[in-house]
Length: 280
View 1 (cartoon, helix red, strand yellow):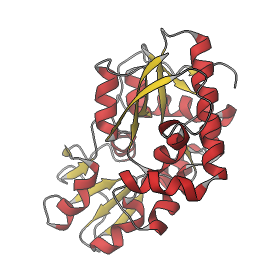
View 2 (cartoon, one colour):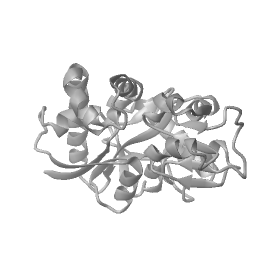
View 3 (cartoon, helix red, strand yellow):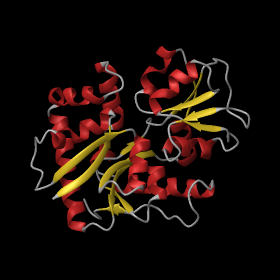
View 4 (cartoon, helix red, strand yellow):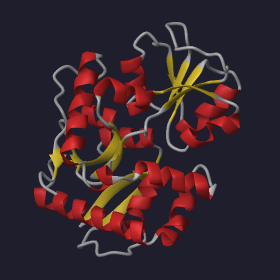
């Protein structure tokens, strides 16, 4: 079966999907047509109906919950994985009403965290995630929220971490931070969700068993080419929740929905996310 499948260019996604991209495993008849894009482009593509399955921010998933469910495998969720709030000034305090803050997309979980944790910081400008640190270093804004490899290289750009938004989230909620996952159309058959999930788990297991083989795929798409940065990214973002959300992951999604509703960051009445397939 042909599937329109979108993933990000980040090492955790290309690690997880390497064996599918390179046809190294049994795909059980699936014929994926891949698009590798920035996460905000993936969010927008799902909203426009361009994908059957795609990686998305969980913030976007909440906006699209009437059309897409979350696949049990493939999520970026855990402890110590959150976006960082950066500034060019070493003495910068928390952002306020007059602060200019750069974020990596309106529907990214990074933007949702900023809105939940710093509700007075309303002067937000969206930029491509890879443009945020250079713009901040040039003085084009007061603060920037960085994701992906930015966590590992911001010091090299001469920037200062004001706050680890993920760590603050963990303190407030007592649970792991859900960043993003693989969404699938809920109008597709449950049997297909089970096949896609099973193939993705197989791909993740293959990547873990063949790390040397996977590196070429990851470096082909990564923003930062330093092997240490790439592997640090994988080791942080690919964890037990990536193979299966489990009960703890589903509770974390429910808490994200609750906080988003309370801060009016998603449409009224939006419920928590459906997880597909129902069992692993």
